[in-house]
Image 1 (cartoon, rainbow, N blue to C red):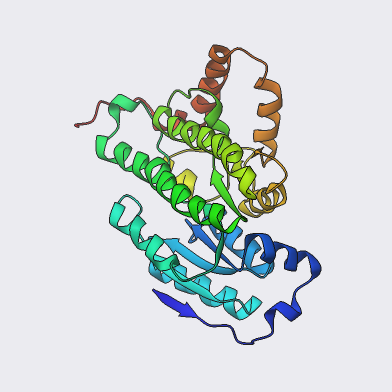
Image 2: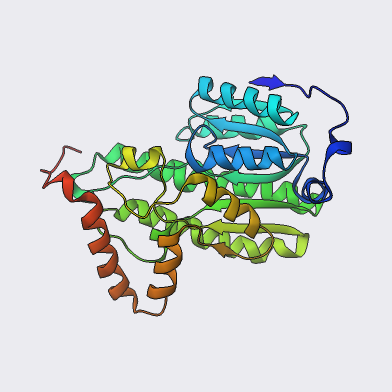
Length: 287
């Protein structure tokens, strides 16, 4: 774990009124998982601009340390990095331990990945790893930090849901199922923790221009930039239960919301066919 100290001791004096309000409710420290790329990295940058110190979590130490140094140098915040593979429960526990002694006010659970293609063709371990990262690590952290925030009677939790969370999605069945779990978890926690002054938000974007698409072997149009998603997500914290950043997520959320669930599944099947058609017909893989 690396630490980058503040370069000055007068950070609170340099904050705007809005930044002071953010620090009072969600600071002075935030935990951001998946911070080395995509939405997680842009959320970390936006939080640094708001004056929050950051505990940055991801698998790749060099990328984390580069980001930590950049944010500390640009915004004068404190940063710590925790390289962690969230498929490993010991690494999840290490994140909790790294946060001990820090005044954490915000959890941003942005780490996650997806796969595409017929589930019966998929390597089973990769699908199980996805459940570990997208569901079990999210659950462990939401419970751990939710208890802390309830005790201190302030704080916030942001869980990254998805456009695919609201119905089954052929050619991405397991990924959509993990995001359905995250979505319902956030909705339940929103009501459980509200009496304690803790805000919980599910952010459900559509396609994003990031490393996610390459790992999932998808070709996506109408994709939103991670900066747009990050800012829309932070703007919604404390104001709603779910936000749908990005044009495609907003359009589909409004157009599909009233359709019967089986119809929504068929619509998503057509969308996924357009994004995964280049893969061809794969043969079943060994399990």
